[in-house]
Image (cartoon, rainbow, N blue to C red):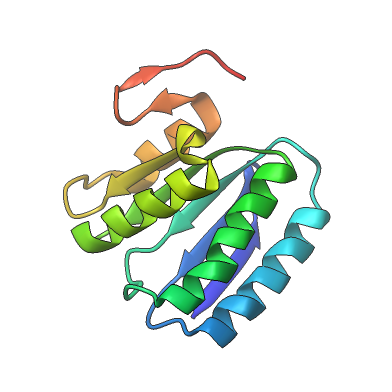
Amino acid sequence: MFKIDKTDYGMKLILAGDIAVEEMTTWLKELKAVIDDMNNDFCAFVDMRKLIPISTEAREPLEAGQKYAKEKGMRRSVVILNNPVLTMQFKGIAHQTGIYVWERYIDASQEPDWERVGLDWLISCVDPDKKVALPQD
């Protein structure tokens, strides 16, 4: 299951359950449509707390979506996870797609105020890994 909502800072994405390649391909198509309807210079809040680790085949459209967002002006993103296996999987994807520099990961099982911490990164550039504000882009 996935959901994509436009927000003041850009978009909020929810990915949950067992997402097969067909659904991830539909997600990519819808993501591109939302991004194409936005101005450049946006941020993405990604809630993956209930996502089951995805297959290698389903990773391809996910990686394509990350690359597309980067190309179209994504400044920062935050990924909320609840599973150390998923955390490692998506950090690896971010390194491969080149967005790790702008993407932060928050483990909701360790950070009770995960939503605020994520929004602080997106809106105020407060790095959750360092707990300080970085210079704005």
